[in-house]
Image (cartoon, rainbow, N blue to C red; front, side, top):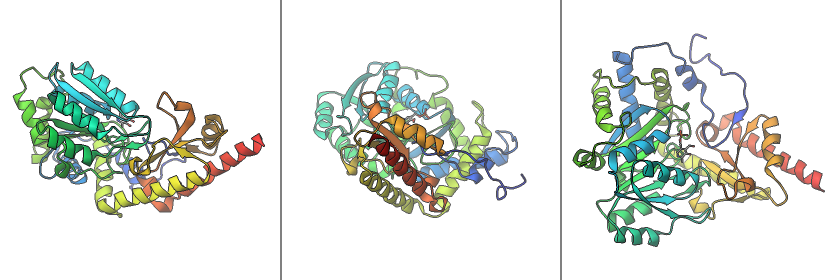
Length: 391
Ligand SMILES: Cc1ncc(COP(=O)(O)O)c(C=O)c1O
């Protein structure tokens, strides 16, 4: 295949789990680009562009320092914990599901004293509980999972940020936006965020394998002043900061080899987010419209939802409860046989009661693909078949 325009990926099942998601042909083609030195001028320019585009996508132009490191989304938790928290310091984790549990575990692994504020399943953490704990202790960091992929709960990040800034201005705020960047609006500068942790394989629509992190000037200042050594080697921002600065300045510098082809793919993916239609701002609206449509249609089919409230439901995915009498076996296998891959439940207390559908990236914004109609038509058919069997 000689050009991106001619390239067509092999026929495959439609992947509509809440990430990784379907990848556009142009991005996959870039992921198969010929080898090039990671310190060549051409690659340095591509890497630098990716960092600049990340700043734009996260509205982090004023205070954001991007890091782009080979690894997966999880590596962003390690970076946050290893660089910003000294052993014994207090961290508060706002927990809306499985990924809140795991972020807390990661912080503990680096010696943080973690207080978990756990929301009821499908609900959000009570803001009074957050304020109370901030008044009781000297909290170094609050972490918030923007969208917990296990429950589909969307946290009111902006509101939590306001409360944290008002109650405890020195406290740092880190959000896990692995399942939010690209599908939910994130205003890094305006909300006063200190860390955004994300990854390419969900709302950004690029293959997995990178940890994408934005850190504030305040966070880097805290790192500068820390007394205990950074408790990691590969995840140390002290090692990576000069590399990121060099790439943005167009200069070669080496610490560890970046995944060159994947960075090429990300470059194409981020350009699509910023330059293709819909525009960045429209993109979030489109995700909202598609999400409301999917949720309304599933409701008509008898499904309920894990999130207790539409206002706190993710726009890039839906965690739908099976209608009465229907089980996972009636839905997941039959959909896969129809070449549609959705995900089962992940929250351990209710895992058998719901399934998860991703509607982010190209599945949401490229409506010519017809993914949404295909998903809804087939979910309706497998539910009708299961009900007919019961009758
Ligand atoms: C909210 C959230 N955080 C973190 C992760 C971990 O990302 P990764 O699997 O890329 O390590 C995921 C993965 O699905 C996620 O959904």
